[in-house]
Image (cartoon, rainbow, N blue to C red):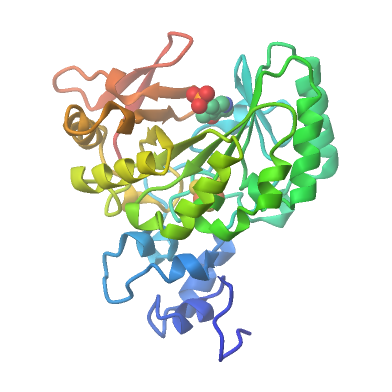
Length: 350
Ligand SMILES: *Cc1c(COP(=O)(O)O)cnc(C)c1O
Ligand code: SF4
């Protein structure tokens, strides 16, 4: 039970959310039911950014569970981007010849309600074991065409400094690797976690690039700016990825503010993702046409530095495709997306 005098550091239960004023007093059981399927965690610093009087608050929309999550709609999938089809060993995804995803943990500092791995993140039963990580490292060592290892999850910065540092050093010893990359929400969701010790742990003998996840300018507080500054001073190049989400950032002004602020923090916007068809996430989805119209409107309006690449992950595991490359002939209900092998795939708006 939470201490009634001080709020808990991370909100995880329906009761925590009621006590913080983020959901109605009678909605705690529904929140707990959602939490049994899709993990819930909101660090108090992030919760403090929410205006409880604004029913459309873009921070709340990303992190506060909603009864709509219990409904699965047409076209939604447990593994919307098809990681499973390209996983030679548990915790590793090898879709493109020269790079792999490695998931050393499934824990995140915050659980985003639109997450494409929401069926797995935060679930102890699915967490990778030390043996899984050993097997993944053996696989990478045996495949000399792999030049980059992308740590993702879950959030790799959920590991302790010691465990993260040890993993990075093991990877840095693999002679054919060119660089490492970390995909993370920690600098935004838990900026205090980005300590000098963490920055030291990143000095592993190979360049480490960091791609942080941010969707709205209000997430990018002064504490986040300070965390980015510690990273850039520590020699870590910063990029960002954002998800285009209905009701969060689906207008030109909101995207403009987000990307300008990122550039001011020395973070280069890298990808803008079309929302994936994860289960119970219909309220976040927009059509490919709507997304392309928004991205077109940013062209010319803001600096080229501020422009990410707008991408769609083709269901079935065929990888990312630039959304501008989608084609639709008159009257057709689906888009054609051509994967990096040159094969076309049908993609429908749901
Ligand atoms: C997204 C992704 C990558 C990284 O792709 P980049 O275009 O290099 O950022 C690598 N492997 C898998 C399986 C991916 O889904
Ligand atoms: S931080 Fe990333 S992996 Fe974790 S819940 Fe959010 S989107 Fe999913």
